[in-house]
Image 1 (tube, rainbow, N blue to C red):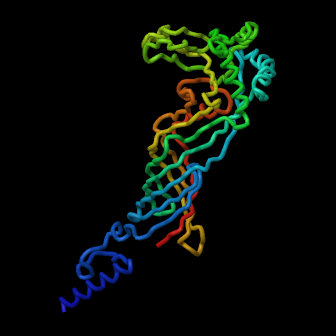
Image 2 (tube, rainbow, N blue to C red):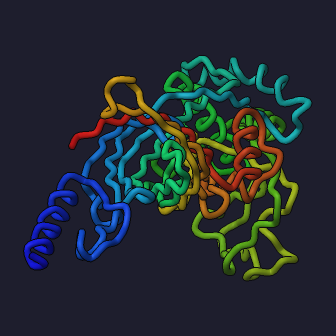
Image 3 (cartoon, rainbow, N blue to C red):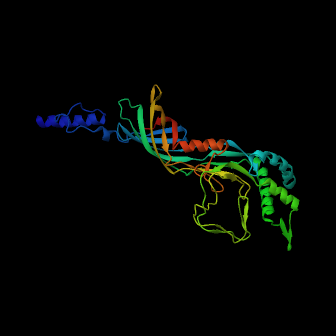
Length: 368
């Protein structure tokens, strides 16, 4: 009878385990061992979520490890919407006379280029970031609607970009042409060489260009001295640094000599168009970004527990201050101060906040 009772107890224990019922106490006559919830509930269902928020739009898949921990992985990308920023084109170094000089030059530039020149340049900024993510959700409370999350995002380095509007290309091309004429007036080079004969601008025109100064977009001031990394010798044809011209063979700088910087702190930082008559900038952050946060969720449909809605709030750690680099290699965050306009507002925000705020909405459907 004793042997039959033990056999019956074992069969009953297997039946209870299959039904998901846990014995309330340990009894050798009832079952040989109590099943552990961490093992019984591991990876026993799969949830699929659609997400939207400050990290973009994307998806998550999650599975439980036990009643407290679950693993979640997914992907999100920010749509490439456009935000427009404005910059003014300056002439010369004196901001009080820049607008007057530009107005006088506008007609000359239109005659030279055939294009109407605008002294305001629009920059179109777009977010470009995307991220894969791996998260651990922890539900330590009896109310399992609350969860804490730790994990990591892995994505691209370039998180945003800005480029001048297409409508401003004629203005920037005119600025390039004007600056080329100004450089030739400053160096005394001919406009062109026909055969062996150099064709020069009239002296009156040269003097007018020198009086006006170079055209540029003044962004702010350098926050520190900029040093040459090595001795620099002016190459063939000489070189311009700012408004100064150095003849071929001139030693421009002693290697890393703090008494002889290329640019002094407080000097104006001016942007000129690149070789394609464009103005560009890119924002960069680390590829790997740790995350800490919390969230709350519940049923989306009262009568269907398979559908849930939840909110996640937290911080993505950039691992330092991101960079905003222009096409000439200048970092607006670390190399420039008092940056003008909307870009200046963004630069100031990035300097103050070392993390990216995360606020996401998730709609979840249990698949099995």
